[in-house]
View (cartoon, rainbow, N blue to C red):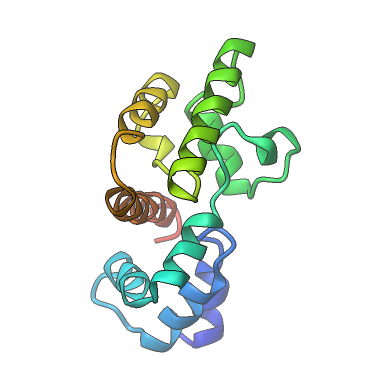
Amino acid sequence: MTRDAFIAAYRDLFEHSPWVIERAADAQPFANLHAGLMHVVAQATPDEQLALIRAHPELAGKAAIDRMLTDASTDEQASAGLDRLTPEEFANFHALNQAYREKFGFPFIICVRKTNKAGILAAMEDRLTHDRATEFATALHEIGEIVRLRLEPIG
C-alpha cells in the first residue's frame, strides 16, 4: 500500500494522534498490522506516549456532553451506555474521572466496547489504587485494544 493510501485508510485509528499512522506508514508492510502499529507506539518516547494517552477523552466527560468526540469515540461510549447516564451515574463518572486525572495526570482509558458502565465504574475504582507506572502501561494496553477493535471493520 502506498504511504498516502495507508495514512488515508488508518488515520482515525488513534485519537488525535496522526503521528502513529504516519510512522507506521514508513515502516510497512507488517505481517500483523495491529502488532506493527503497537510497535510504533512502544518505540515512541515516553512524552509521545503520554501525549497519545492524553489525546483520549474522559469517559462521559465534557467532550461527550459538548458533542466534541470523534465519531469512533461517540459510538464506543454509546455502546457501553455512557450516553444514557442517570444524574447520579454522571456525577460518579465525573468524580472518578477527576480523581483519576489528579492522581495520574492523564485520563482513565478502557476499551469500553469490552465492558459496560458498571464494569467501567468498577475498573475506575480499582485502578485508582494502582501506581502511575502501572496505569501508564495499562492505558497503552487499553489503547491497543481500542485500536484492535477499530481495525476489525477496516481490515
